[in-house]
Image 1 (cartoon, rainbow, N blue to C red):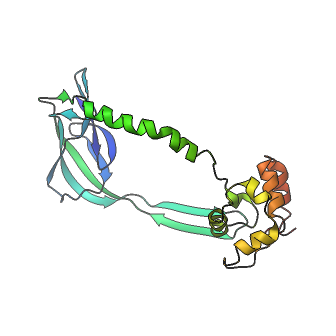
Image 2 (cartoon, helix red, strand yellow):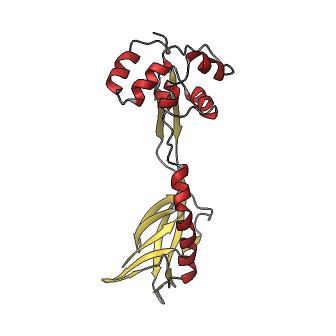
Image 3 (cartoon, rainbow, N blue to C red):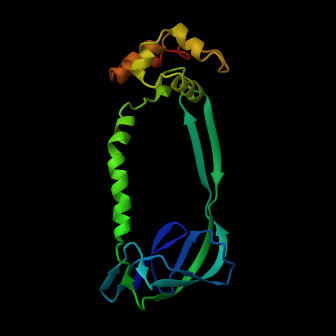
Amino acid sequence: MYAIVEIAGQQFKVAKDQKVFVHRLATEEGKQVTFDNVLLLDDNGQVTIGAPAINGAAVEAKVLKHLKGDKVIVFKKKRRKGYRVKNGHRQSLTEIVIENIVASGAKAAPKKEEAKKEVAKPAAEKPAAQKATTAKADDLKKIEGIGPKIASTLVEAGISTFAELAKTEPAKISEIIAEVRGKHVTDTWPAQAQLAADGKWDELKKWQDELDGGKA
């Protein structure tokens, strides 16, 4: 017999006497804990599927110990930006052992008509949402010399696509980003943006390798 149960935001396939590592639980070591969000049960080939959970079903477990997982190195780097960040992370975990799977009275939860009505309302609002997302913003940081701060400043000024940037004069761009710290050379940004807008990425990359912060 096994069950698929949600524990601390994750789904696990568990069986009796199985040990499982889950996200840190608030329960003390040695204490019992019950998980009632059982999504599926298999009792010797007889499968019961919840909608989404199964009424009356539960997984009983015992907390063995609290620990931390292996260290994970998170390294971020941005090419030609001088940006490098290295961090370490150890996830807080709890080791539990499955003591029992309760299936008595297990019954798939009935679908409520109210849920269907609630789903119908957002469907009517979908066209408006689609219109709002029609004009998709481009990643302006792909332009040599533009970092995250400058990109967000340009977006706030109404320049969110390569095509819009290509139509903007370098002097106007310098005026928009005047309050951003550092010395910024905007001479080549419109031309770079035009290549990006036209999809000429190989030509743009070759040119960017010859640039220094946007300056030819």
